[in-house]
Length: 378
Image 1 (cartoon, rainbow, N blue to C red):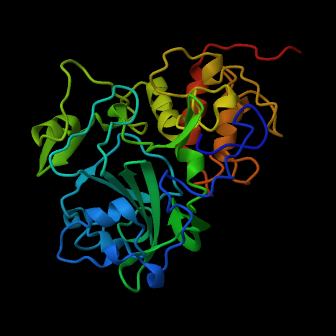
Image 2 (spheres, one colour):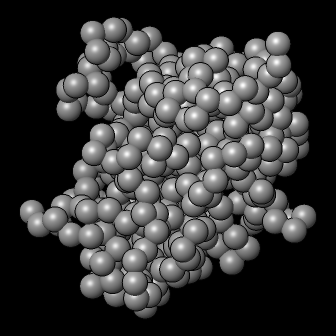
């Protein structure tokens, strides 16, 4: 799933925690404070501060000019494109608002399986907000805003923790922990919401390609973007809408598609695969942080076999068992680790402190429908 566990084939046996930061530029090791801010951050005029985005980490989110107000309100984007994913990564019931910003006269590059090819200078923004009282209510508090900026040397992570006193995000290289409480289905959840440090973020976003480590986005793939969205009251295909704006050129024919895992009209197996793809496959792939686990959970893989977890031993985990025991969802360690919350057991190990119970039920129900197979003798 998201991070890697120190033992077991369910996740990789190594943690890349010796690299001080995410991204490839030379200012990754700096902790920028308001007193040491680059003068580029003082630019004003209402336009996006593209130069600062390419060269420094500003102490306040507003100094980049990406928004004209609260970033959780779509209308406040300063020329950015709000986008939606068919399925989202679970983060303690946080609501998420996503945007991308492209330099003038540039386009997204179409890639059928990998993330879109963003031109240099692009910015991806993800806003996290938690409900203030109940997940059923609309009231919320912004918790953090994460920027991914594509500079000439590669993608750079810039994390901000939201400060309600100034209605702005403060640069938080070391991350933060904030106690929160709200109700979900009549149960009070008391949890410690954690925004990732600059060094921790690499565990989800870093890949190893031909021996070279690189830092990449996770969500913006064609299969998750190929969705119907509401545009000025009209249902439109998101990708086709972007093409009408000149943001992407789509090849002829059908495009990869993964359903919303909550859509009960979609086939159960496709829903389960969509959930595992967005929540797990960025580590559980040939080049991800959990490559040594043996799990390969990308949606586009058609075979449900050992690489997808079938009878793949989770012997390195203290709970043992098999990732997927066909026909035996309650005996499979994959949904069990999605359910457990202890730091030594949960998957993903970071990014959540409570379980996504609907997703756990989905994966178990799917495993129960798989043709029964005996993973162990005796």
